[in-house]
Amino acid sequence: MKNYIDQDDMISANSAYVLQTVRRHAGISRKEISSLTGLSWGGMTKIVNRLLESGYITEEKGNAAPGVTRVPNLIKVNPEKNFVVGLDFNLAGFHAVVTDLTGRILTETSSPAPKTNTQALLASCTDFLVWTLSPFAPEKLFALGVAMQGIVDVRGGISLKLPGISDWSNIPLRDILEERFRIRTWLEHDPDCLLFPHLQKAGKDNLLLLRIDRSIGAAVSVNGKLLKDTGILEIAHNIVVPGGKPCTCGMNGCLEAYIAPCLMEDNVDENALRELCDPLAITIRNLSGVFRADRVILTGALIGYLSQAEAQLRGFLDDYCPSLPVELLELSTSADVGAASIAADLAIKELKI
Ligand SMILES: [Zn+2]
Image (cartoon, rainbow, N blue to C red; front, top):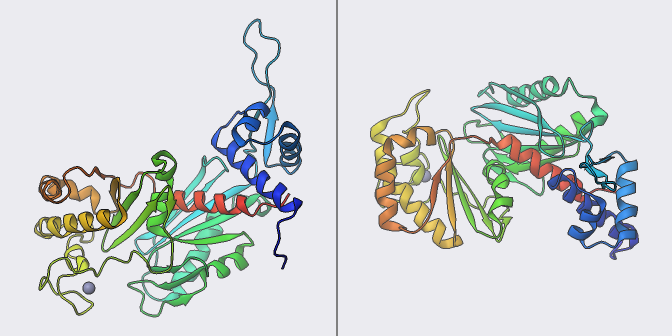
């Protein structure tokens, strides 16, 4: 393995930068690419031509306004290939999207997930992906991102633990899917996938996202970047009420002990929801202090119901962190979309043209 950067590496890095720029500014001219990326005209031209030849982008004539003779050509991501797959691997059900490189959704699928054992769950996930991908030619698929519940080793692509499936342990899900579908695959922690689509708009603001359903997952961005590592931000068993409700882990007063009773099959326990408000507000205050969060997003299956106790939650938040914006967001963007977006970014970083 070489330990230096050569000209090919520079061209690859610049190609990735140009492609990212085109993804974010559809219908951009060569001149605009050169000015946004800081590349010289010659360097930009070489890269744009390579990306055109490899089919990542397209170039078409711009529409001339009346009386205007010279109109620059418009460069866009090729909408016909390099599709990205996002999978939300969740015991509540599988959800998937296939998008193009701009994030435009081409198809969306969902299916129940068996909650029995590892083998059934893996077989069902594979069948679900086969069905989702059946309309697409394999050579048109560019990357697969998996938003994974539980504890995830992101670097190794391994799902370490999945609460609720007792024989699920150290499953190399990235390699399993990569081998089966022959698509470059990344495994991500699901709250990170929910936060990722918010990053671009947030700029350098630090964000804290809590996904609350039957348990809780957290994601944090610092200076515009996701904070990622194995097993960090596992907050379900933080003690928020000393001597409080008994938890499945054997301790008392864990956050999860207040979340778990809230959500029933398709309804909510209003008393449990009210009891959750104070511990949840404490959690938000503590985490936002640790990460200097500028804004907090609460999302997940429970949030649709949390509006029933919102006044109470807001009361505690006003006491503990009065100037912190806290937004309740029902799942409008699901984790599969974020997983696809992260995978697209990472696959483009690896681009060799
Ligand atoms: Zn606990």
